[in-house]
Length: 129
Image (cartoon, rainbow, N blue to C red; front, top):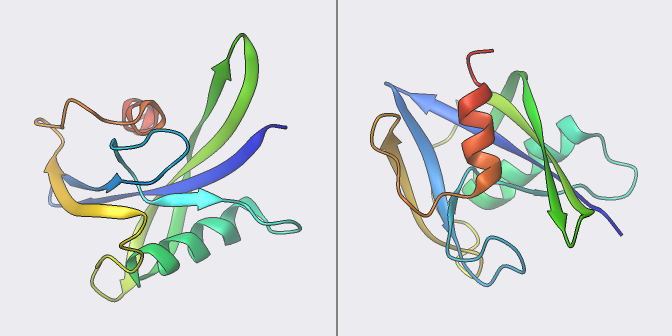
């Protein structure tokens, strides 16, 4: 079964907000944009809004879709993730799910961590397309 997920890229003063995931089945201990799985009957956009609120306690507005990342395991599609450029409408990002998020940090777009999730790398690469 293909995992379907989404997430938001938040850029502030030429820095991107990333979280370090823990206790995750995939991309564990990697820095990534916030986001998560889409629930049954939920749109990708609504899932992104919900996930960022659950993880960080913020209300966001989607600006636009950036791109999709396809994750393959043993030459089979394992995950399909959609990244959105988003802006914070209200609240300050804070860790609301400490069992899933170890750290939260704004990183300079010119100085990103080495252990960054491939889907986040893809979204950042596609940001200016």
